[in-house]
Image (cartoon, rainbow, N blue to C red; front, side):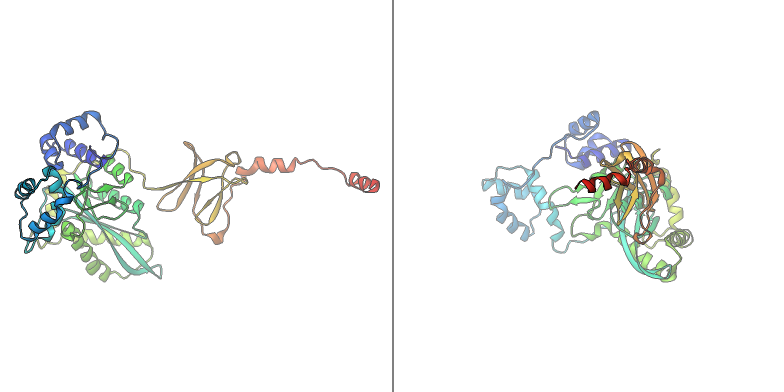
Length: 394
């Protein structure tokens, strides 16, 4: 059974004009499965349990054969069948495949991608000075597999929202989208990646891939060579940009200098592997990039909140007023990466603020509580004489 990420890959490949039989071969599925998925327009629901139950009694034999240098799955299958194995070849291949990295004297062959196929993404970190304060700058480096042109964006976090924002900014900087994006196994993109299994991707990452039309890819566990091009670029940024620039007025200033450095240093350089000027090689790759979607993916944080009785919501250690009719309701807060807070009651935006530190106190919009104050002012006032008369009777 296909998973959602398999369908996203099928959709992206079909959109790029790849034949259905070639898509099926890539995913190790039947061409009819590809055809049915495209007609259905979605992946079938319900996870498929995959394991090694039939193979488990024969694992000692498999381990011995691999230790002796026998890695041909067809040969191993025949030997196991003679020993009573009743499972299929696919189960055996799934078990062997992630262990191939353990082969003795196995050389690593550089994998070169065709134009427009792959973008490799990775994070780096460097301690620097921002506005006079020592700060850990997290920077995402996204590198095109063919031309080696890259984009870098620095920020204060490596969470999911910043990862998606970094990818989107790269697509916008390059003017298009690659057919696939290769990421590391960070949780913001990959929920789980077990040996012999396809990776399980984060649902929002799959939504991002679906909107922009790329197929998500994840590095094989414990095999850093898979994403070597981009990891080398992380080192290049550290050893070149952050050696040259050591302090910044703000995050905006840092990113302004990064893009200047990309234009003046990174793009005009002759790449040591392909022996070409990166910017010139990119001119051959640019026509192969897919267009950007009409609507930008929303990278903001979204969380539910219960409005208190006094019509405030608590957000990151401070309180913000909302219209009094929302008191007691569940609303949705949306916080952009540049700290703009909006409060949504269903589809309606009922309040908007810029986040403020706790020391500044609560944020209140007077008209939000006008009705509450009116009720307070309309409380019945009784003369003190009534209470004095009651005291006399007592």
